[in-house]
Image (tube, rainbow, N blue to C red; front, side, top):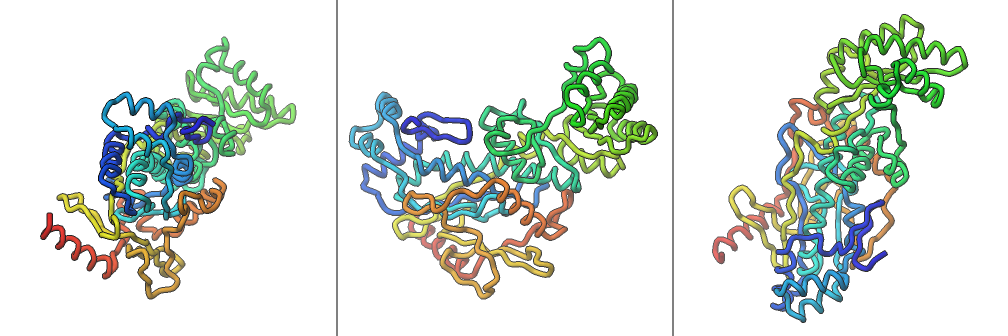
Length: 461
């Protein structure tokens, strides 16, 4: 691997230390010039949830730790910065040798989180912590966005399989890979993305496109050809022309397959009046004695469309969800921030209107109620004890002195954690529409410190 490269799955980013905003480097240059080498703690959190959302699913930590572990400026990166003419030789020499030597505490991937709760906290010499800000935000942000969107489609499907289908419209190669991973993390069963199968172990799946059907002179011949090649794994796309006629032809092919000891696995609908069409297609197959043929639906779906289809009684067995999930169409970004909360032993905060931050290194404690369901969270100071020994501290040490403390968990374990977390949410918080707000409280000690620091800022600003 090239010095200064960051490898995330199959995607390699050369000169990854430059994957940042220029002001991170200019601030670091000033810190170095001023001899500011004290430890800084930055907290990464979401200020407020998107409209209609009641919780998020944390994702991206594995990539964050890999980035921090490999962080360094290559010779090419240093040459480029030198060419800008705004950085002096002592600072460039600092960058040549700098590595991330800090600590990270974070919630595990797949954890349900809420507004104002830290997903992670970075403590490092201030220049180091500043230089990595943009990458840490980027790696956490997109993956948390997609995981939080995907879990809603899984909930809407009510136990039916959800297939991630959005690779072709994902915003870039890396995003397409991350979307497949995060959808699987959130409970999708398979993905159309074959490279995600190789990279992450996600089972790949696929049917056929309309172009395949139209490449044959007659629709039924395309069905027969596909059935001959894939046998009992065959799923036929039946809406290229007339969906009902296509269903009848698919039933005819299914009978031919049965005669040679094979079974048609299913059919896919991608357009039209899906509730009405799915009911008629189901009737056609049931009448033909083909009750085990599944109906798979795709085409512009997300949690709202899935929920609506099932509310209308559409006999659908599985859903392909693509673009709207992979770009989180209704909420494509989070108000995620990475803010300084402590420097050189001094507690700091931001008091801008609408963007006030909580000071101090923190811990989030999760309390449970009847049925072991989540009851409320308490944001406290990181070393603050709580009275209930059963309360779960969410932020855990994952990196110390620049070293990752343990290998990342298998994706299957992260997926299981997400499912367990979502299942433990109160029903009124988990529902897709009109969800209740989950209680997030702040400890008395944290509140007292916040008020003291705010007063100090008012006196000295």
